[in-house]
Amino acid sequence: MRSLYLWKTVDGAAVLRLRLQRWAGVCLTLALASSAWAKNPSKDDTHIVLIRGLLREIAVNKVALPRGGKGVRVDSAGKLDKADADAQLSANGLAIKPGMPVEISKITFKSKEIVFELNGGGKKKSKWYQHLEVGVGMDTVPISQAPPVLTYGSWVTLVFPEKVPNLTVDQVKQELGNVLDFARRTPTELYAPEVPAKFKDAIKNHQVLVGMNRDAVLSSKGPPDRRVREEREGVEQEDWIYGSPPHTLFVTFDGDTVIKVQQF
Image 1 (tube, rainbow, N blue to C red):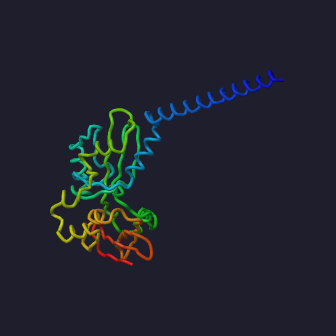
Image 2 (cartoon, helix red, strand yellow):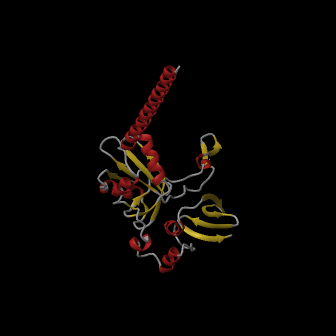
Image 3 (spheres, rainbow, N blue to C red):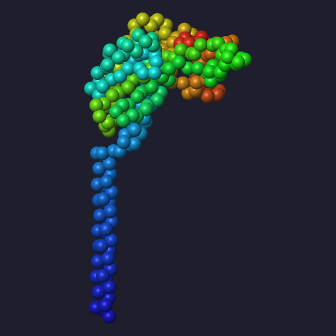
């Protein structure tokens, strides 16, 4: 009986050691897999990291950005394609002046490019009913005679020689550094000395004044919680809404200019 008891004890210890060895092997495998993932994250993981770190980020524009559907292009070394940028400015006009804050409103990943939409993009906005016409036979006229609303956004496309590599947020900011300043060191004073002193003071105090443009409001208050566009007396206006009841700030724009500020 004693020998049988000893055999069972030894056998139990062996089973326990075997289980511990297997568990250690599983832990080691998971650790190696985690290390490999950290060194070589998947494309989707990289996209998620960049979206989390850059979407809705505010930066200061350092070059003239055009309207239209293309914007400007920057290579992976951070060099701006100036000839193309000048051509876009000539064809479509200026959307964002140097020295003005911009918000990254959308990020699109392509095989060899990352496209950053700024301030909602540079295409003219129109209502669905502006594409409709009424009439008899071949004689038709548009339902709405209002022209498309001018935009105050643009795009920056980061171009790579081959497929988009795995990047960190800091690497992307560095590659965009010749176009966008993410440091945001009192941007209005650094890049736009022509801004009136009263607006500079308001920005420092995070206030909004009638007469400010969108970039000054972004610099002062950041991006709004909500945006609402309405047509009032034939003119399309946009409200930027900060906060929620009972403490809500309404900033109303006509084009690029603040025409009303209401605090509730």
